[in-house]
Length: 533
Image (cartoon, rainbow, N blue to C red; front, top):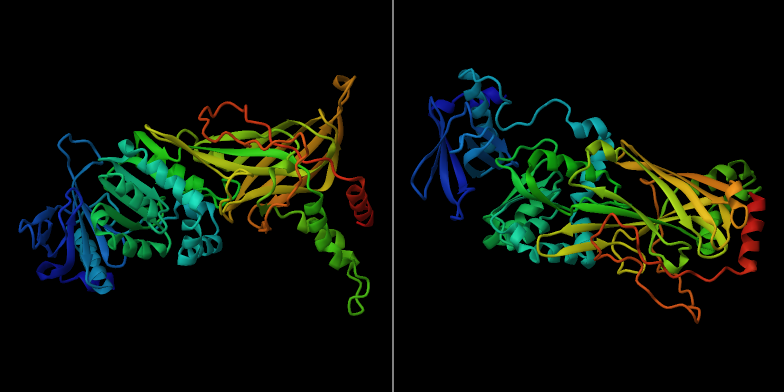
């Protein structure tokens, strides 16, 4: 079929609805694409100077159903992989575009061009993304982000969107006259921010159907659109005509790493970014602290009470109660909680996007060590994250910390099915172990232990240990407002995390306020419930 579409390339003109030069801010104009025995010629109406592309060295990249990119090798400095001419061409319909690319392949075949992939196509071999991610997960992932309602949800997160806007605009010096790649561009909003900040050109790479909406949105902002090219495809697969000075992206998921887009961000760095280029954001931190929350524990445990029925339409459901109980506790809880539920100062684990290897995200192992500030029952580990935009002018943090303005990421808590008891000053140790799986998420293994304390503690060991296994892919979304806990007379509100502190190697974060000790009544309720399990 491809050959039949392109077999008359020798005497055929392909009508182009627009031709625009990537190196110029000139308005695009209609034109004609024509093949000769030596080259492909692009004839724009204005200026009336044809552009020649030697198909032995040029690349013709299909960016979408009706859009393509023609780039030709050969710069003044003679560096390999650099390009001196690039034009964006758009066809009137998909049929003309398909016929054009078939003609390109036919030209290459007839002229015995060797050594390159057929122009206008992606490699047919399995990409790195396909090797890691199961197809059904990828399909659902790109379907989700291809819908405007989900993009709207993220755009309306004003903490997220406003922080990105401020980080870009306040650091115009990093963007002015620079080439930018927007990794996972979505609606294209970050590309538009980069163009507002004076970027020379922005390549917005988006694999989902949202790429078409991004084109519409960008085209509706013509003063910026002439410096933005939307490329539909995955960063693992697409080719770009030039290296980037800046990567910008919003690759963060729940617990920072969910959805495994950080790996694509690092791959884009290795493929597209110059050695001295910047990444916005450039650093991420996962923060962790033990917490106590009797209300949450009772809520999760009560879900399994359904399975304690011994006469459900004449059926005894109790054989499945234990399995159901553990199943509910295998779900990480996503909600916004009161920071006074934390019972120890938090610690954090740093991910340096500019230096880390992709493989370091396959398995993340974090040793835990805390000092309890109050005597209580520890119900699990609370987690949140922040990322740093380390601009030349302003360094800005985007935080999801409890007590800070709530984002669409909220916070995440891993709840133990068997809580542990601690006293003030007692050491809590453990391990948070994340292992990536092919459903674009992670299995979480958490262990928390209470060590002996007081006189003679150095001769003792672990008093209590509790562990759990959770699937980050299947959280319990508990989108209620944080419980209102009354402040004691000696308590004062303090910021939980100094998000403007850019000394990321330091863990000297301010101590959160601690909730009052729970009443004996609530502890007795839990003990009674646990005896039934």
